Length: 289
Length: 166
Image (cartoon, rainbow over all chains, first blue to last red; front, top):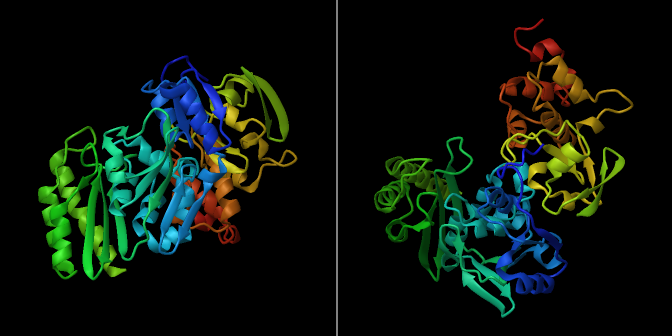
């Protein structure tokens, strides 16, 4: 039952079911700013119900074959199409074996019914401060492939997220896939939700060996308006033996250096405390495994 | 407006829909399938859960047009030849429903879980129903009901499962 309230219905739009990437680009060129691309629609419909978005045209890419694929190739890495659901990412054996942080984040996103509809690309493109995929993809040095009427381009996730709910996409462009380079090391993801729908703080860590040198990535989500990288904690992990005292020091450095905000979910001091706790947990799991 | 034809509990139903119509509103308002409850419209409470093409979905997060040509099952379609399926009987036996508003969604989700995993652990149950809310808080009874019809649970007499009863 709908009460005609703007908070339960969707604004008017015309629905288009795309059958190929070319068709998506053609529709985007035709309707430009008026159009939104939809895969699972989970985030998009929430924005539309709040009237934060009122696209005149919705382009459904759910059944575009090219975008349905999740493929791993040794040496090349992982490619996740824009219509691949978070459930499919969580269930993928190559992701589980080689991209642990991504597996852990995907397995813990929302609930099973949401995971069966929502896509990883959609989660990334939403770019709200509390989603889990941006810190993970940044820790894994992932990039996005973008298609538009001008052709295809590839940019790192780090540059793709310009601000809260703001990504580097032109009106006639959309993300076709996420590309994650093959991992030589290990990674881990940890978040604290405290029963909330969204994380109050999350962290993705990865430690790889880069030509004999150890390379660390420590990226926090949910603590500020965009993901926060902690170079100081990375330095601790790169320069010291990976042991319990090193983990403690990295977690303390992160807690001190990472800029946290106060908002409706938590205040900055509490987030700083959480940063220390989740960094310790994530790193402990990473060096154990 | 366009015509939408959906097989609901084995019967093909047709009506005109607008592109922006939610599957939830189509089922409740147009087709009068009243077991599908509308509460949050945000994918948070899970009370509008239905099975679409064999998978559980929150129908407030699905467009009616996406269900066109598809197959939807609601709790009305569970009973076979007028007889409740075991999980429905177990809900009654264990008092797993208080006000009853959320019960159709829980029955569907429990039924779906038992089909995939006939012998779920507490953790399996908690994971499977993570997307559902019950404001009366019958979570413990729901868990008991599910265990009672699981492979190992159904071998035990009822009184061993429910502490302080019998």
